[in-house]
Image (cartoon, rainbow, N blue to C red; front, side, top):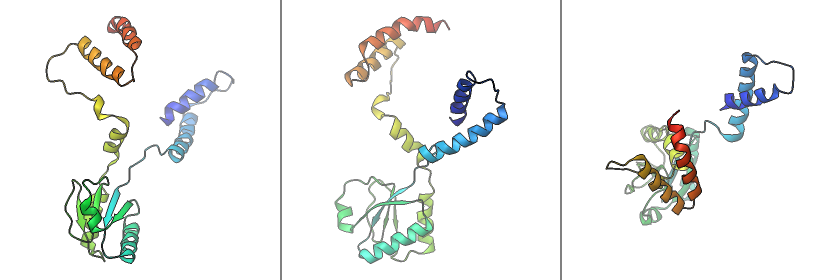
Length: 193
């Protein structure tokens, strides 16, 4: 992405100045633009694990556990802390996994039970969950709506598939009928390329 942006900027700049820029100079500019993108827009962003902490041992113990976790795994984000009773009343868990000081039921998310003063083994179990890369599935969920994926079991020609998808997008207000008629008139030309 940084390469494409730099190349586009430099090629546009070349029209207005007599100077030529070598590939090495473009590469140098790419490094600086890449750093700027990284800092400003989190390009290459990795989604950090979100944790639910369940603790009935009191506020001081919660703060102590949070401090231990923050020191050992600074990349985690403790989204919320619940009491055992509040946790059991929940139907589902949005966080990536649960760390609890009491035995709790799993609600489609992994649970690590720890002592108020976590042992090395317990911290290692947390580490196994922390180090799982969650970025790719999260990016898919963020940018692709599951409602727009289809499983088609039977045979379907291209025209029928296109009409079905256009009708769905039009019903959602994402597609205008004029687009599909324009596409159908252009399609025969593109098939010859």
